[in-house]
Structure formats: C-alpha cells, structure tokens
Length: 191
Image: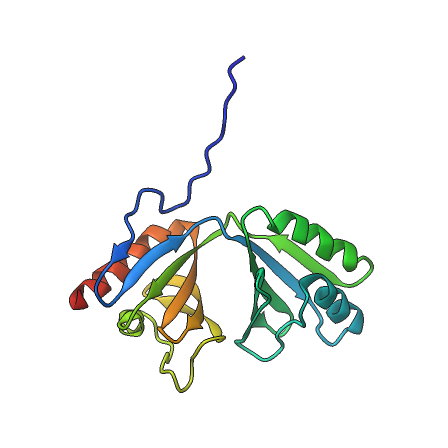
C-alpha cells in the first residue's frame, strides 16, 4: 500500500502577496481559530476562561485582548473568537473544555472555515473604504478594535493591529480569493 501524505494548502495557495509602495496585502495562512461561547456574567465561565487564556475575556463590545500567544476578539455579548498558532488550537480547545466542565459553554474549532488576509500600509484604510461601510477613522476605530462587516459581498471580521495601520481580515475560505483580488485591485490605485 502506498504511503499517502496530505499536504495542507491554504485557500490562497499560490497567490503572490501584493507589495505596493503604500499598501501590502498577504494571507496569514494556518492560524488556529476557536469560537468560545458562554455567559460572561457566570463567574464559573469567566474564571475558567481566564485561567486557561491567561487574561480576562474582553467584554467591551468590539475590543481585542492579546496574550502574546493568543488574540481574543469580542464577537457578541456571549461569543469570542480566539486566534492562536497553527496546531495549538486543539490543545487549547481541550484545556478550555476541561476547565469548563459543568459550565454552560461551547468551544468550537473553526480553523478550517476561515482564513486571514492582512492589509497594511499608509493607504490600507483607503483600500478598505472602497468596499467596507465601517467608519475606520482613527478617532473611532484604532488598534485593539474589531468588528464584523462586509467588504463588497464578502462577510469579514476586521481587527486593527496597529497604527500603521495594519488590519487582519477574517473571511470564509470560499470568499478568500474574491476578497484578495478586490483588495489588490483597490490598492493598485496608489502603487
């Protein structure tokens, strides 16, 4: 019998990152992603999550907590999205489930459902404004902020990483190519 080895490929495998003068766009493949659900007012849930993650869950809408090894984004009053290193999501999911034994909660690995496209540079905000209705002005949306939105017809989750500005856009694998191509087209105006 032949030994068959599966090769992991991202949805943008083979796409060349865009390296413009004022904007850079590239996929961040193979980031571990977990969805965590529970009641933040339940002290058992909050304590269990905090003990495993090493920080309290962000409870202010549209904010992000960064532990250095994980990034936790507020999605809704009882939902968070956790990014971690590829391969770390399985052990993290198990630690969360174990810590929350008997606590009303859910932890789901969504790593294979989404990918992340990073856009950065002086014109990143302008490129996003071409297809995203969010107000990304620095006075209302800055580092440590996140939100769900659309870019043209693709549902995205956007996180601002720094003041460069740098943004991570989470998108379903099936829309990754669509989003990537539209972002590159939008960035070409300034490069």
